[in-house]
View (spheres, rainbow, N blue to C red):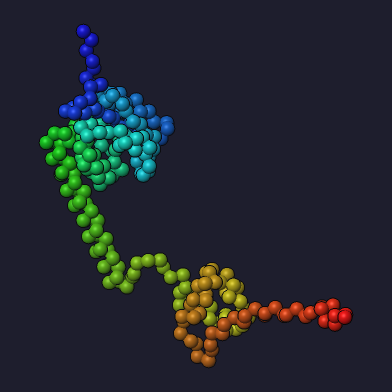
Length: 230
């Protein structure tokens, strides 16, 4: 009597094993990962050829569409699934919410067992601890910068010397705003903004540019002025 291979059996008590493999470039070979996944009992392996930093991985999306409660997603190594520890934990948690297990062959982690669940709880605590450290270091760095008189954001393109030079050039009435902007290597908007915001210079005022002359009204043609014949 023929025996049906166990990897093709799918029941409510024992789900299917679906493998996921990823390589960064086209030149890399997936045979090492796919062979290991098939040897572990995966009846189908989804393979992406993309960098781990990319958000879109089409085969991983297909895998998530096909898994059902009771299934287990298998990878050759942890870094094949997650871009970072935080992303890996979020992905495994998303699978767990759908009652889907996760297994990594190299690290010998299986979330369908109590030991595997404990390991991922520890991973989650470490990831949260890392985020808190980064947040504390960032806040401490910003506080230290403010204490030294430095503030975040883009540096000002117009220094005090540039503002003074722009005002002198503008008050001489020899330069247009566009010419001043080219000399100081800034935009015309910066010149207008800082000329308006800068404190007035003694004996000088910021005069606005003269508006362009309005078009002269067209005079009626002689034909339009000729009386109508009766």
